Length: 362
Image (cartoon, rainbow, N blue to C red; front, side, top):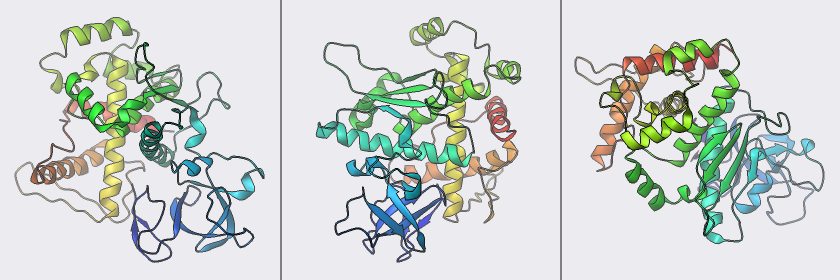
């Protein structure tokens, strides 16, 4: 994520900020200019600060803006040009337009969960847009377009399973609860489990359908990840019954990646998004890592390095290895678990290289 600055007072901002804590300006993310902008109420609007009205950005006075409808729930801070919105309509931003089902928002607990889910999902869409990947919705592609369903458990019914099916990503909304997610992580024997991680993994399945299936890349994908035509249900049953092979770290990024080639692709895709986004954040803050030691490596960042641009995978890995080692060391200094609890073996680098080429050859 890049570093955002308040145009009104110069304070540093987080991507999720709705209000500047220094000057109290209302804030919104404007995808068209890729900036968090400080806002003032449009002079033609009478009183109040209702996000459903019209706004103008500091420094962009000629652009009349509206918030996404989900700003009314404090679940979104993205903006749309008012000229693109029908008067009296309830416009949805480039992230919220993919929602098909959200939890019952009359329940305060569900509302809190949904806000956390939206924070992670908006971060995902930011990354996908910066990689310039296609993002068809169900209107553009009724059979395979992207859609999200955030479901809550129903008493007497099996809990909803987080997963992907033909463009539809389902997330069990209980995963927004830290205690529940940590319990699931422990039961599943996972080193890492976050809402953003869920989204990055499931969108990997979506892009396997979009960028690999029915393309000339399918054979190379099978060489690296395995034959996707293997029975998926049987493979998962075997994985949960027998676990991963003892030497799985030699060829896979996670134990779950061994379950089936689709899961290996999705897990590796998620790692790629972890890497490029975190490198952007490090670069935005001017971080440099040059640890001593025979295999310490260096972090050859420059002020104009764009991890979302086209680079050989070796360049990204040369930056990532010392950066992730430093991140883990900092976390341990705070008594926390490693931020990046994964080992990137040479076969995993090759798989990451395939995804890198898959994205940038477009």
